[in-house]
Length: 393
Ligand SMILES: Cc1cc2nc3c(=O)[nH]c(=O)nc-3n(C[C@H](O)[C@H](O)[C@H](O)COP(=O)(O)OP(=O)(O)OC[C@H]3O[C@@H](n4cnc5c(N)ncnc54)[C@H](O)[C@@H]3O)c2cc1C
Image (cartoon, rainbow, N blue to C red; front, side):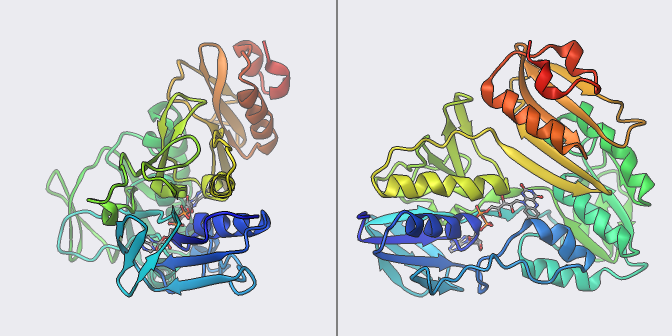
């Protein structure tokens, strides 16, 4: 398969690696250079807040054989600038005929002079885990996906965990307050103190300064308030940025021959008629298929029904779809009493999104209805005794 003679991929995470695997799987035989800021070979991040943090896993390597993939890997090298046909790093310059941006995202930090950990890299995870001993007072800022998973693991390690959240409910940004609030009770059941509606003003040497003047003493503070796409180095280049690298539905940037995928890319979704950016493993896994196809002359469209999962407090949460346009919530089961339940978002009568708690079958069936774009009967959907697939109106 022919394509551009020299392809450079920036970012040696899942999206970067998958791009190269897809190129080779499609028969591309020319030169591929992979530039990655971390010194490690590509590895998986979801276990960092789960099995790595509990101590069940040390190595999350994606087991990529870069040698047999024929990759010129430039690890521990950071891209710093882009000019037409030329990528600059802190160590070298690379001429390219096509470029893939897969630089992921970087955690946000809070103001203040005190030490704050973040959880993005395997090194972050190993360093943090070493400090989480029985009795350690851990304060986590942010009750999002990662804050909840970290609290779960740290409590299991015997730490005294407090989670401080500015919103009135956990997961409020991801799921909205009505659904997020159903997870609040899980914290207390796991022995974790959850403090909602508490704004942090700064991280101090001995803990967290709250906006109301209280100092929350802590041995370890982890800031888990979200990430920003890792695109600062592209400022001033010809690449259009809009909440990350702006790409079209084929994952093409504003510069010909330059693509982007994964956490760093906000793509035009034909399905939802708007630009979206997800920080989901599933996106980094599949979007590179479209990038590779495009690089080799294809015209594939990236138009996923988004999917994300989280393992927290002994439960498997799975979310599929996008509820930005939803106007109705339908509960399947009672979150207050049931160990397994689901909630569905409807938009103009159609199933738009679903979150399941330890109900993978409901999730799969919901995904199919969402993909089909069919209207559903909310009364049947509210009955956990009726299979989700039988709820089409
Ligand atoms: C702790 C944790 C738990 C998670 N759990 C889940 C989960 O349960 N479910 C789920 O769906 N998703 C989860 N995610 C999200 C998922 O891991 C990400 O969506 C995925 O890793 C994105 O892959 P990526 O390749 O786009 O970016 P990344 O994995 O961030 O890789 C990007 C790489 O590019 C490098 N880079 C950045 N800038 C430069 C530069 N200028 N030059 C060179 N290299 C650069 C970075 O160092 C990094 O190695 C989790 C993420 C974290 C951090």
